[in-house]
Image (cartoon, rainbow, N blue to C red; front, side, top):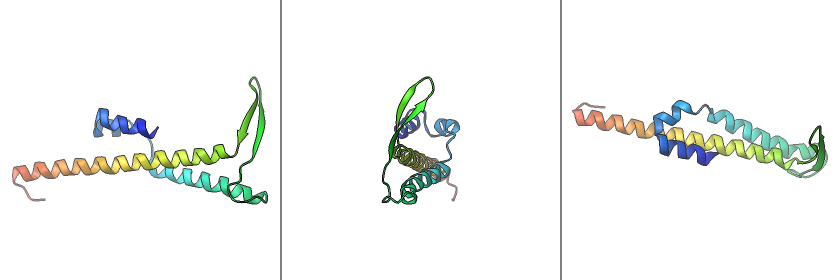
Length: 113
């Protein structure tokens, strides 16, 4: 997903991508790190070491038994953290490139910063 955001910035340009991306990067990063930490601490509540994974099968109607592990919740937290940080980096780089273009245009016209 992070690569998809990178490709959108490269293919469509900064302004095009920022008009369409609806992710709030700090919120995604916060939710991600909180999910990963809570998942790791959940094992402590059951008397196991930090980040110990548990595995069982869930019985879902119309589908049947589906394997489920607590490592999936940790992975979702890491996913959210990576996507949020990638979008935050892209936004910071995009704003820097826009600002540099504005400064160069002002300098070309002979105006001061």
